[in-house]
Length: 383
Image 1 (cartoon, rainbow, N blue to C red):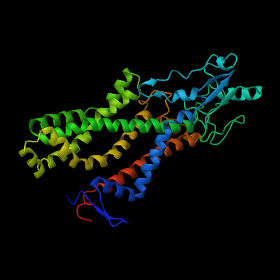
Image 2 (cartoon, rainbow, N blue to C red):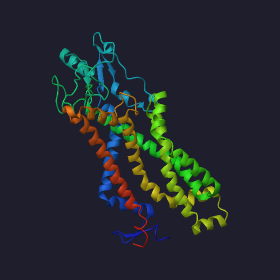
Image 3 (cartoon, one colour):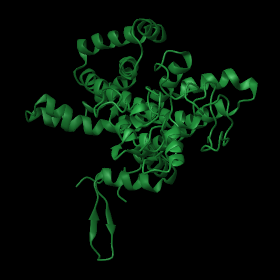
Image 4 (cartoon, rainbow, N blue to C red):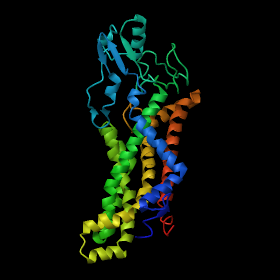
C-alpha cells in the first residue's frame, strides 16, 4: 500500500491499526487544538441557532387559555428562509387569548402578567429570553436606547440593550448569526458546485475550451459587482434567495481558477496516462482519479470562502443593499451603531462587531487547522 495513504500505530494488543490518509489528516487536525475546538464551538453555536425561536422570542412557548393549548413559538421553527412557514402562520390575535381590544398579534409578555394577576388556570410559558428580533417601539415595553442589563417595569433585563427603534440588540445579534452563517455556507456550496466542474473541464481538456471559458471569466469578473447589485435591488426587493444568487454568481471564479490549475498539473501524471491507456472513460478519470488528488487546496480554501461570504453579506447590508428590513442583520446593526456612536450608545456598534469578529476568527482558526492538516509535506514519508 502507498506510504502516503496508510499509517501503522501500535495498540495494547500488539496489533497494527491501518489508517487511510484522510483518517490521518483528521487525527492531525484534532491535535491542532485551536482549529479543532473552534470547529466544535462553532458547530455547537450553529446547531443551537436553529432553535432560536424557542430560546429567544417574544412569542410564548405554550399558552393555555380556557382549556385550549397554543404553541406559537414552535410554529416559528418551521419558518424556512427560502420556503416560508410550512407549519401554518403563528399569528394568534390578542382577543383570541383574552386581551380585550387587541385584534393584532397577542402581546405574550403582557398576557403572562395578565394571567398571573387573574389567578386562574390560564398560563403562559415564555422562552428563556422573551424578546424578539423585530419587535420595536410599536410594542409596549420597548424603549429606544435602553442600556445593557437595564430593565423597565421589572421585566427581564436586556442583555445588550436596545437600539434606536427599541429593538433588542442581543436578540438581533443572535438571529443575525444564523442568517449570516447560513448565507455564507450556502454561497460557498453553490460556488463549489459551479466552480469545480468548470475548473475540471478547463484544466483537463485545455485548448479552445479553456481559452473560451477563460475569456468569459475575464469579462464576467470585470463587471461592476456593486453596481449590478444596486440595479437589481432597485428593481426587485432584496431577499435571502436573491442575494445568494448574486453573490454566488461572482464567487465561483476563484474556485474555478484553483481547480483548473490542479487539473492542469495532475493530468500529466503517470496514473492518468495509465488510465487512458487501458480505456478508462474520461468522466471516470476526472471524478475518480484526478479529482481526489486535487482536493487538498480546494478543501483548505472552503473556510476562507465562508469568511468571504459573511463579509460580502455584512458589507451589502451596511451599504443598504442587503436583506430587507426589519430582518436582523449584522451589517444593518453596525450602520445604526456608527450613526449613534458619538451619542454614547457604544453597545450598538460593539455588539455586532464583536459577534462578527468572533465568528470570523473562529472560521479562520478552522481554516488554518485544515490547511496544516492537509499540508502535503505532513504525510510525504513513512511515519
